[in-house]
Length: 206
Image 1: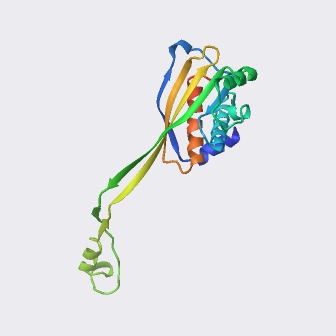
Image 2 (image 1 turned 135 degrees about the vertical axis):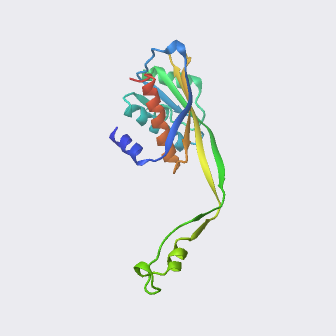
C-alpha cells in the first residue's frame, strides 16, 4: 500500500472515469475477492497490467488476484479454464479490463506578438536618474514575437467490466481516460488506481 501511494504521488498523469454504469439489481453487492483478467495478446503486458490492478485494489482495501498466476498461458483462455480457476480460488467476482483506443489530438497555437517593457539604466545621456529620455522610451517598447506551434495530446481509453460469479451478470462497467502519460507503466498505474478508487467509492469492494 505504501509503494502504491508513492507511485501515485510521483506520477503527474491524470485519469478520469469518463462514464460508468452499475446494474441496479446489484446495489448492495460487495465483492470480497476479485479475479483480474487483462485482455492482451502479449503475456508480459498482461502480467504487468493484472499485477498493477491487483495492487491498486489492495491499496483501496479490497482483495484481488491476477489471472496469470492461476492460468499462465499466452493463448486465449477458455471459459472452462476461467470458471475452474475462479471456483477453485474462492472468487466471487471477475474483473475484465481491455484497451479500447489510444487517441492522438493535435492542436495548433497561432503565432503571437506582444510588447515586453523593460528598462536598462546606463551612464551618460543626462536626464533624471542617469538616463536620457530616449533610453527610457526605447527600452520600454520592446516587442516579442512568438512563433506558432503544434501540440499533440495522447488519450488512452480503457474499458473495465465487473461480473458476478454467482449469476454471471454484469454488475459494473466503466471507461477511463488517461491523458498524456509519460510512459506505459505511468498510464497503467494511473488508470488502475483511478478505477480502484471508483470501485471503493461505489462500495463494490470492502
